[in-house]
Length: 128
Length: 252
Length: 242
Image (cartoon, rainbow over the protein chains, first blue to last red):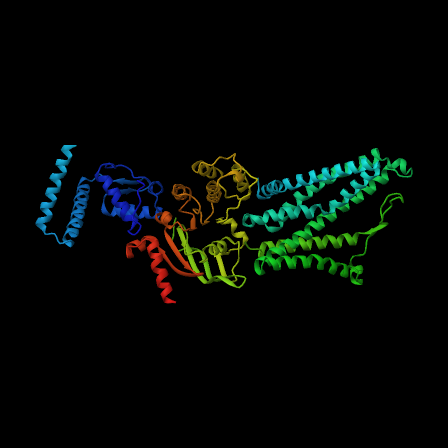
């Protein structure tokens, strides 16, 4: 977890993003307790107030719930998790789409390129 | 351990090397004394060496404080960061120096006494001399050596504090110049003041006659308590001023 | 228990002159409780002077410096733990004796915390301070400064002269061992990149004057810049303004 953060983007969002991804990858399981703010700050090498802000942000998104006096837990609400999954997918695709559009690719080129890439990737995978 | 004991212990460690060095120097010097005395075939020469070393102890505190303060100056911010008031910081040094002085003085006194009674038997040389004479004269001299040594040590501390203040605000050269000027000027000023009528009126009181027998080598026939009182006040004033300067004016 | 409103360290129109040269000029600044604050600027911009003023090691030529309303004189050392940039120690002590000495001086000194930090920094208690490497002396300095439970911790260039791996472990150490709910940590450093992620606020000074104070995360949110980038911008703007 000690990879560097991009120093010119808000760290609380980068950290929230990391945690969300861990939740989707099931590295953090549903209902699991997140490290305390202090522990998380030490683990990730960021300011504790920033971690606090990350946790608030995650709570606002619904991916975690804080239980008074007990700590912060990954939500058990499958609906919310699903939504999170969909949202992250959408975000990723939209940034891909915007970038490609900026470079002048047409929508058809994007779709075919993506398909080609995926099948190429699969071929590469079976050749290993 | 509270801060005061911690600071005393620290000063002990800071001053220990210097004190041991001074003891070694003392023994080397006495060694030279033994050698010279043997070469000259005159045991009394060694006694003279001892007496000189004994008298030189009036400068012991000055030397001790010099070493201690110069070493402290290298890490001045650590010293100033301590929670102790400046007078306690100085007292911790002075007390340790005093302890080292007492130890060194005890050794040289013992050697002097032994060589004065065994190697050269003063009682034989001078049949009128008695033990009470030796002891009372000895105690009188020792007390004065200790007091004068402390006094000079405090005077030096005072000059050091002024040096620190001046050298920070005006530069090191100015600090040195002012320090040296004060070193000569202040004693001169004091001797002027002490010879005034006002001084006599204020501090020449409480005469005590000293009943040393004529054979004891003491030049004083009487002393004035007022005079001691005056020097006590002056020492306090110097120490207070030095503390105040360190507390308020010394910067790093 | 945190409240951003309470101001704890206050510089009120402070000018500090050394001989005739001004190290700080009409400098006003208030810093809140419970933050990790970076004090940045070029060499000779007055960073060390600011820390020394807070620690009471020097006093202002004009104006006032207070910590929790109390003027910063020598006595402020009961509230302020200060780490000097100087490589100066009592060399006759061992590492363990140095810790014992600090323990005796300060009633707020947390012995077990100090031991933990020594372990974390891999310092050998029986080693003489004069035999330590420069890096290890630097760590010892940090250990005794950080082991005090005081509201204000000041560190002047704690990372200078240490190699990158050590710097990283020290930055982590700061997070582990400081009590961020009760303590304010002010750091001056040239190694901005290393401490950037742990800072709440950054104070930028130039030629003894305050250029700007910012919340670091706000810089990233509003301007999409890192501290180093921001510093360059402000320094340039400041230069043009003059």
